[in-house]
Image 1 (cartoon, rainbow, N blue to C red):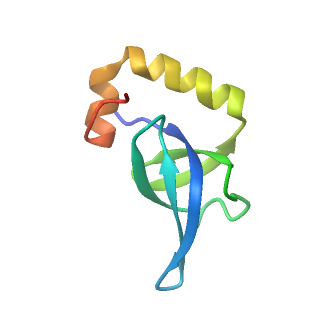
Image 2: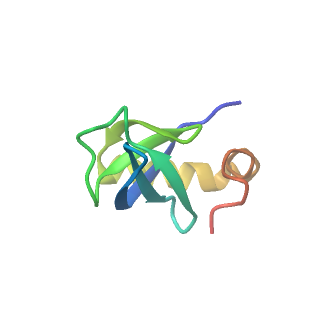
Image 3: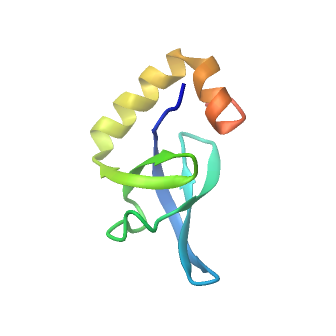
Length: 85
């Protein structure tokens, strides 16, 4: 199963000309590529799939989705490498 997980952009930086970010997934932080979401900024919520932010999502939907994903702990752990706190 492949999941798109919502995360909040907490930092944006350049990595060899590629726009990258640190995203917070409810306590788990990962590096994500913002090349598909150039409009994303610090504080934006993005849906991340295999390390790429593929679309923006509003905060309410992001929080609701994270709540549902916490109930599916095994699926999230498989995608992020650790469970959501």
